[in-house]
Length: 109
Length: 115
Image (cartoon, rainbow over all chains, first blue to last red; front, side, top):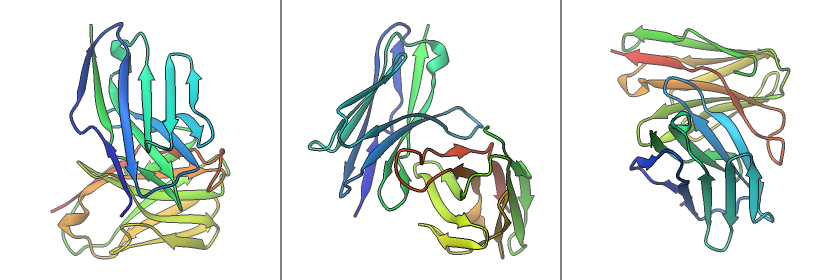
């Protein structure tokens, strides 16, 4: 069956470091992969979309990679700040957009 | 929240009662979605709509029905609420269903508790 895996354990990092979040999937061949940010008590907010033929995409301090051979996407936040603390969701486009459960990121000052 | 409102924002109800949640958008997007979010499960699609009066089932549609009589409104109804339907419900909209324009915009959510 189709499965999306994101680290269930929170990622705790120090301010200024690079945060790297992982999204692994099985039994999918998504044409697109998206990343969202969700703050407590709020709806997810779209961050980035990457196509299957793109290896990497950047937006300000954010970078996403998409490896269709490894079936994995990495989401990087460089020079992380406490304001980056949130839950980050990956979403794969199959028949419909399917979301992972998300990884909590905590950036400590 | 991209011109999306949900009402009510919080609701406590009893098992067996009907409940209707409303999603209203001002973006004129064609596609609208209802998700539920539970710890450990992430967002799961309940129903979606691809136009006025055009709806289809998602992954967890049992016990839920939807209606869309106007572009801007998408209603989710729990015909007879059960405790397993206690969750946070999110409405989302998108311009397209697939492709590079299908990023979704989410409402603020409705926290529903069924006692």
